[in-house]
Image 1 (cartoon, rainbow, N blue to C red):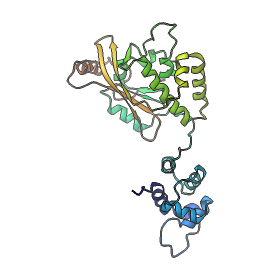
Image 2 (image 1 turned 120 degrees about the vertical axis):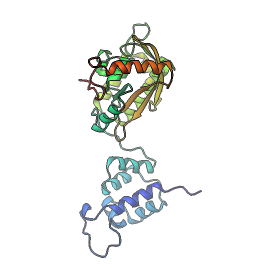
Image 3 (image 1 turned 30 degrees about the vertical axis):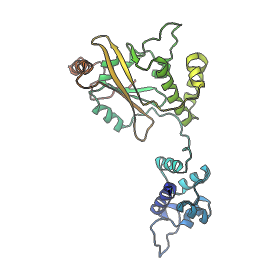
Image 4 (image 1 turned 90 degrees about the horizontal axis):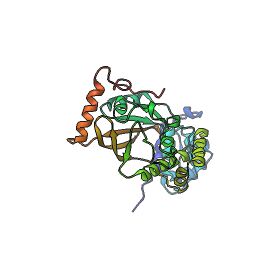
Length: 300
């Protein structure tokens, strides 16, 4: 069975959309295509014409990272397109810079539209950067959590002095899978972020600090597990409505490293009724635990 030539298809499509003028070349006359010729792309990328032809035709399928980077520069690819070209070559995309804590306007709008559900936004290193009013109503105001630098990993691995782990939020939020699985999931996710941002000094210092000062974290970090955290099932021991069983989902905001975390209850259950009660209280004038539900709170 023939293998789809994703790399060659992308390369040819992007070559044909780049004008010679955009690349500093003379357009000339009698051009049959609007974009770059293969020989022009080869010259811009420092490659042979024959190699560009073989890449497009799928006869060369294992370009080096240097070749892919040169082609991406010559084709003026944006970061997402560059990363796609690397993936088509079965190579890891280039590492990015520091973990971003900026929340784009479209993510603010998305959180606003999720206002009936507890929703928070985390940076890729699990620093809490925003939340809505229902989040505070269900798991407490994050400003009371006591996490170092508002980081979930730091909060989860707080020293307990040999006692049971402190409540992770304003009150206990318990994973159905157990503390150990929950901790391993977050450490594995943090390892993915650390690999993607090897030059982020703050993240490197944070990981080094956690490894030196928390044996549980150090043990989990040393096992090498790496995966993205996608969700969990939680019991929230709420001080007003009692225990609530909720599903926690972790969504990735497209084009960012941000994690959008939201809690939902199964429909037509006691848990859903408790959420409705908290939702009603949250919407009462003067009863909102943070900002109005239509806005995302900032951590400042």
